[in-house]
Length: 169
Image 1 (cartoon, one colour):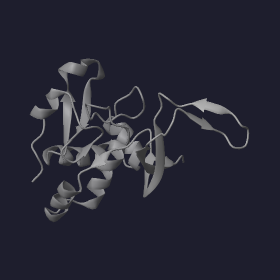
Image 2 (cartoon, rainbow, N blue to C red):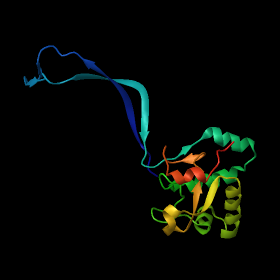
Image 3 (spheres, rainbow, N blue to C red):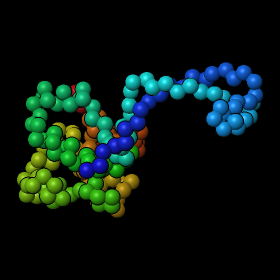
Image 4 (spheres, rainbow, N blue to C red):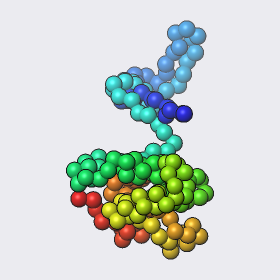
């Protein structure tokens, strides 16, 4: 289990330079700074955490789904499926090269393929998933696509997603 790298955040303030040289008091070295900018770095009391892969979860839409009575186990399934989304397309992938199937998702959550298919069909009926062949990715066959109004990997998507889902209300 690898955590993201934690980095302090700073502000930088340009300071005026008087003259064109600075001297290292310990070594006596002289440095030409005539074409340089001197910056003062100050911690701002915030950190950023860098991860190689993450998803955005729209908590406003999540609350709307909970109020509407969606089962938490169904949301857990959707989030599990979203752990490896194809960037810009929101296709649920089992690994780097293989889209999820009902069988692979069943294995992921410990249910039979038939039970998993029933849950997935319910998510499709609720417009949280789309299941079908995409003309842009025909080689994948039928794929599960997660509704980007709820879960997404990036801010911009291929335009075909606009016709697949309605906004969650």
